[in-house]
Amino acid sequence: MMFRVDRDVLAEAVAWTARSLPARPSVPVLAGMRLEVTEDHQLKLSGFDYEVSAEVTLDLQTGEPGVVLVSGKLLAEITRALPAQPVDLVVEGAKAVVTCGSARFTLLTMPVEDYPSLPAMPPAAGRVGSDVFAAAVAQVATAAGKDDTLPMLTGVRMEIEGDTVTLAATDRYRLAVRELKWQPDQPDFQAIAMIPGRTLADTAKSLITGAEVEIALSSVGGTGEGMIGFSSSGRRTTTRLLDPEFPKYRSLLPTEFSAHADIATSSFVEAVKRVALVAERNTPVRLAFRGTEVVLEAGSGDEAQAVEVLPVEFEGDDINIAFNHQFLLEGLGAIDSDVARLNFTTSTKPAILTGGKPVDEKAIADYRYLIMPIRLSS
Image (tube, rainbow, N blue to C red):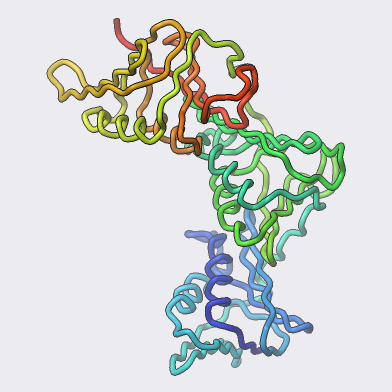
């Protein structure tokens, strides 16, 4: 087996494939990256850890068919450091020799026959713009739980109903929901999937090089159940799905509010960051909305204290409310709008953060970030 390919193209493909390699593989071969030169002069690089698979296909300048398995991490480090010249890889017995300009590396190969076969992609279900998809996933994944002892809260729930995709995630303290349009292959397609949050966020961000992302997902009871796939521009990745159990989140989203506030997002973010400097790890930032201003406070008693006042467009009854400052900042960072709107019911019930002033006051925003308040001591 041998091939020649442009250094930048190879380095990018190797780095992308190496994302799926486990940091602590259960068996040594799972640390390997599989390289296959096909009869039609294509190079396939793949990685698999029994949960997530990744494969990228490249066109070659020249090549001889064959398969080799080498350390994925080492190959990524080598290709990243090579000079900007064509790269040659030749398999010589139990070794793979990488040559680029005057640089030459010899890698030990691993037993290809011990490497697991990549899972087949589920049936293609439809397509969505890669930029839109990456932005939507980033908005929702920020609210996914990080506690692996509660696996159902570490995922992003994807609900597909016709041409509408709804993404939702929660860690019990906040909830993020985003709706977006896509192009289904079947107009009446319906499906529900719980996707590991970190995997989905990483995948969506890594596929923006193409104009569209194709989503491969079985409908209820179809083939490929328990698996979801994404592909774009010669790259494809699959991941196993989590148990579909998820809180009934729609009932948590208030539909009527007693007050709302519109604040310049950038000013609000900077003010929260400054006031939070005196907040201990789990102490809240307090917000008091009155007329045309909001007073931000943190710290109390003998501790360090901070106070800042911002202008605000506020309608409704005055309200004092407090939030975990990190959760509030992550929500503000996700709305992608110059103006942040906070909708309130009471000081002890969740608030809804959205981006911008709605054109229609009865319209439901595409993105909603529910954040639980922290009860203030009387």
